[in-house]
Length: 106
Ligand SMILES: [Ca+2]
Ligand SMILES: [Ca+2]
Image 1: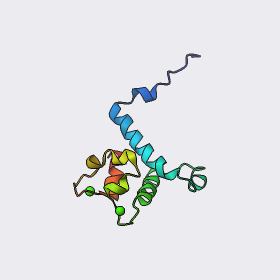
Image 2: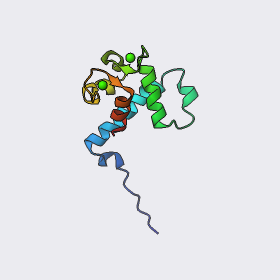
Image 3: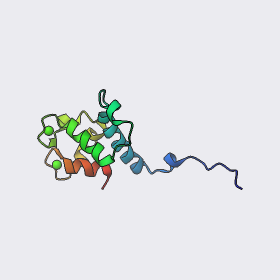
């Protein structure tokens, strides 16, 4: 029987880019899904990441036009910092698709 403990260094093994991608996703989701009033209702069960991303997008899209402007993205610092990179088609705003792709890293 083995008694050695496995080193718990998974976070340290992540490459910077992968770690950053995780951080973007977590920050973006946490920033909005942990907002007061929502936390109690949504935290007991694990929320599907896609649904959480959609919910984050909807909350950030203050004017409801289906796109995030740079101003709206400021509510998600992790997204705002990468706004230009996430804006794949360069139209100056993030569509729901671009938002999903950027966070999920596809
Ligand atoms: Ca908008
Ligand atoms: Ca765009």
